[in-house]
Image 1: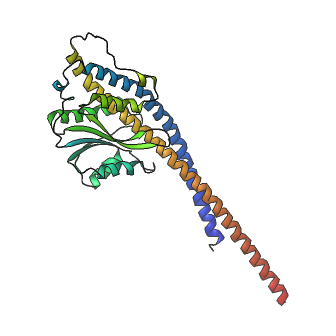
Image 2: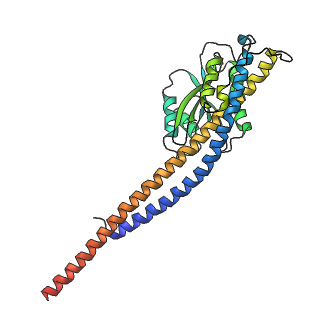
Length: 293
């Protein structure tokens, strides 16, 4: 049995760990609330834009725009959205599993330090990594989106896809591969966007079948809308990833705090037993000494 001194040291160490994890849980909970509000607030806007895009695309020749035209896929372009820091449970590991399952030629564009480290460590083709703060400014994501769109139009990559942790709720974050370009099947794409905001009122909005007049014409309006929508859609996916990150970290820190509390109870019980055994041993020694005298 360990000595009482060793047990006291372990109790002190566990108390310090519990204090740290509790503080990290509170910080993550504060960030989580803001990130979740931002992700949920952006869903109706993104979905409404998708519905507008689908309505507009029906009135033009889709194949005329490179974003809508199908083409042979030689090299995939994937934006991997991970965290900058750890201590968020299996969130990043689940994303990395999706990456390792990819066997086709692919170029990676990374958001998050953990993702950049993993891609470099596994010697995969990483084109660029982009820093994004916890506030997730639209201008930060826009840089990554426009860079990937430029490579898509130049033929360096033939698709734009996003691997990210999709935010469902505080306890559930799904590792997801989301195609962004080309938008060959707009109805399927809009259905994915509606699935992300299925609880919102705009989720039941039907396609607009009215006769509409576009100025200067429907083709030019579509060409102006598509790049902006791609930027906005990628921004919404990164917002969802940030909400997932802070939710996963809060849950992980709460679990660590609860485990430390349980371990502290076990150590306290062990310490009391060791202390009682020591006291009993001293009494026995004193009694034996008196009897011998």
